[in-house]
Image (cartoon, rainbow, N blue to C red; front, top):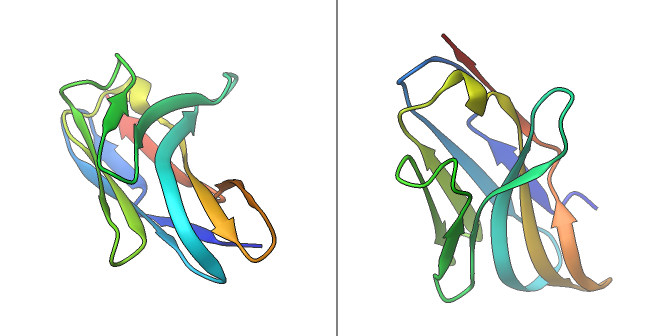
Length: 119
């Protein structure tokens, strides 16, 4: 099931900004923690930031002070504001959310959105 859909990726120069969005839709009873992960070419997927249903956030050290995660519970959407982007931020960014759906209560992944930062 495609419960999560990301948008907002693209090509940006170093020092620029992008805002990613991830919307959850479908037969969802509730949304718990949401987050963003990324996978660069040849590397493992890594955590970027998470946000609990109550708003508590957690960031990877590499993005602290540059990225901000937020969520709009009324819209079932999580955002990732990325500022001061660096070439090493280039990756496919994946949305993750723990959803209570008609099928199960578990973590779901989006298909990803590509972010490319040029030097």
